Amino acid sequence: MIHHNRWDLTRLAVSSLKAHTCHPYRLLLIDNASGDDLASLTPDELITNEHPRSFAANCNLGLRASSGAAVALLNNDLYFPPGWLEGLLRALQLGFGIAGALTNTDVPLDKFLGHGLASLGPRFEPEDLADKWPVLSRVLGVFNTQGRQRPPTKQPWVAFFAVALSAGVVQEVGLLDEGFIQGYEDLDYCLRAWEKGYSVVKAMDAYVVHFGGKAMVPADAAEMAARDAHNVPLFLQHWPPDRREALLHLWSPHGLEAKGRQIWAGIEHRRDFLTRIGQTMVNG
Image (tube, rainbow, N blue to C red; front, side):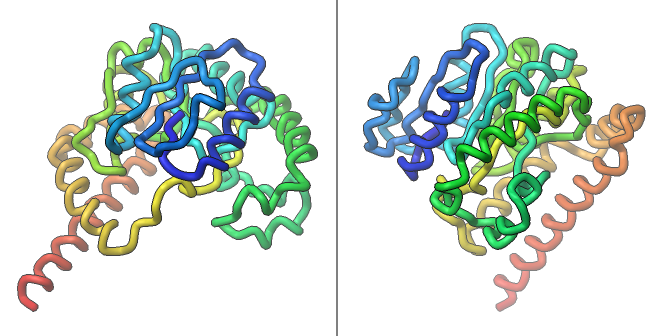
């Protein structure tokens, strides 16, 4: 689990993880130069960065410290109800290589506690649910238990806010590409896993509450454009048309070709937009 900002979120994440995780685990906390007292949260291991590092670099610290078993990469802006880890690991036991968690962007919280939660909006805070956590934990725990009847759904990629990697994936795919800046590194990793013969899925019985990037300083439009101006060409350099076409053929039997084409089209559209913006700035 990576911590940089929002001590309150990390404390909630660690406390809910410890309270609701029955499967044996080893918790590694990575302090991304926050200056906070993470040792008081009693992780099994604590790594402290002297200077802030990228998301990919911090994930790689965790992968290098893994013991050869499955690894879960976790944000600190999460709440873990009962059954979350068992759901991710069950997908790996079924033979899938990467399993991502289900969250409130997939199934809104108002489904579980009534439509009064619809007013939360996408940027809600943990205190907005302060009086609902006990009930929500029980309800989501039941949801995860019942979710065992729902098979994992294959995806071209999953976001790495809460994801489990099989030991084989860690060994064969290796580390995240640290050339990317806060974006595209999880997409790139999943595509490399598919090339190695590992399927990527979303686990229907591994629901976690995600507070939507609260632990990061929000990026404005200019910063996002600067990141994409770096990441998009790098991604397309790594994934030229012939390599992308090979993935489409690989995905076709899994019913993922249309989703794959949407991904490529979206990235190429972003590239073209950035090119137009760059030309406008030069001409201006």
